[in-house]
Amino acid sequence: MQMMDAIVKPAAAPGLELRQVPVPVPGPGEVLIKIHKTAICGTDVHIYDWNEWSAQHVKPPMVIGHEYVGEIVEMGPGVTGLSIGQRVSGEGHITCGHCRNCHNGNIQWCKDTVSVGVDRDGAFAEYVCIPATNVIRIDPSLDEDVVAMFDAVGNATHTALMFDLVGEDVLITGAGPIGILATAICKYAGARRVIVTDLNDYRLELARKMGADAAVNTGRDDLEEAMRQKGLVEGFDVGLEMSGSGAALKQMLSVMRNGGKISLLGLGDGPISMDMNLVIGKGLTLQGIYGRKMDNWHQMSYMVQGGLDLTPAITHRFHYTEFEKGFAAMHSGKSGKVILDWTKK
Ligand SMILES: [Zn+2]
Ligand SMILES: [Zn+2]
Image (cartoon, rainbow, N blue to C red; front, side, top):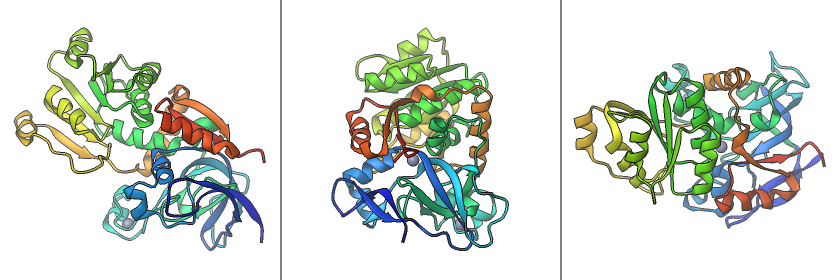
């Protein structure tokens, strides 16, 4: 049996371990991908910490990780349209293919999703095995560090492009990695002003580097003053809620213009309440966002080729054997995206 290095959740407790595990063997319709680069997601940090959500979903021992880029090295029987050596990433949600949403093109709402790196072995390893239908071909011209985080960029793309942005004023609550990626996407897609709020000055600085017109620490500074300075008259046209904070959502509802549209991506620790009278009175549209649409993979490749610069979102790079340093950076609150390199032993 061939063995490989992998970052494993060894037991139902905090922490991760670098271990030797068997290289997966691709079955019918499956593809084996040699990993080049991976990115650490907030979900991986939750699994590291072993919070309530991970205790319910993850069954150790298991290889974690779902943001990656690599190349196809082996194909199981029946795989067509792909080739050995091809640069690829992969959609992390493996969907049933038969439910109503799978059939109408909204695979992100499949009722029987299995997640790579959560429900089955993931990509923080020298190799990952996924169904060929989840493989995303990646143009060799794209920077691998950027493609490594495309899973998260896909969440940001899905959230940001849910509503028209041309000439619109956008409020993004939450300057975590997805919030700052969405900042750059909104500017690229034609928003007039993008204002980002958070309570963390390091992250707000990253939001500025990603093109935010203003980045407001709402623990200290007045959002409405920033709106006046940027020439907003009736409030925000579009809101992207990325924080999962009830206080942030409350503030967002108060500064939307009548008829404004809100995409909700941030998950809270528990139920969040809101003023329905405000939603109704202002005629707001609220859209929940989960995962990404398959088309988002094409959109983000093309946006990057068209000049969208996502590199300022990457703040740390480590060899995979130094994964503890990567998770420490994520825990510190002073990081954007953290990339792990798997190209050398
Ligand atoms: Zn992710
Ligand atoms: Zn389905």
